[in-house]
Image (cartoon, rainbow, N blue to C red; front, top):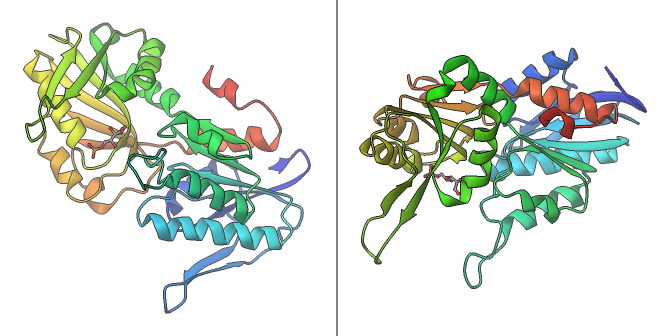
Length: 317
Ligand code: R5P
């Protein structure tokens, strides 16, 4: 496949080689030969083993755990390609780590998402492609174009195949996620409920108030990130206590750190559906009630349209 003005090439870091291979297969091309490895002291070393002069290059690298190593790989690959005279470099970061640090949360705290944006830009990226950014305004942390893709078309397809939509209620597990959940509810023409978490007094446990009548419904929780799994497990308990028939969750980024997979396995969630924006661990792969949806086709199509200078937003109309 070729771009409007020159060859397109895909380069993969070590964060999610399976996704990179799938995207390459979807585009009908091979990954560019490159070696991304460590010196004995842990420093990242990159060697691009084919000519990339004048090419339109897409680096596929989520900054998932170990976040700092994967971020450093992305920066160094970018530097290597810039120095090898690539024409245009797009950092394809399906999971953009540090996104939850998008504001000064307290006195003397950093805005790490902005620092990461600066690092990617200064390393030499011309544009960024990412998926379900935790906060859409992070796009404004960059002075280069950012395409924030949405996993919702992939999720909607699965939900439509799976459920009797007349009995589905979409649920946002917290007030911050309402816009995202409402968008998906609209696409499947389903009602929306919201969980309002409140700690009445310091030291007391959180009260989960369900806004909306979920009794008898199949509830589908929608969120961008599942990390410890605590939010989802508590939300499932609250929904069932309020009469929900069963609870499922569709979450874009399966961060699933620490004992999260075991927490999901032991929860009342019927199923957690995540995408492959982050390469699943063995523990995640072995968890019976966690299922993966691939976003390779979505990213492949967005790369193909970017290369051809066609609209990407129309993918989500
Ligand atoms: C928070 O704003 C995010 O959208 C997720 O709800 C949160 O990161 C989930 O974290 P955990 O799984 O640790 O409860």
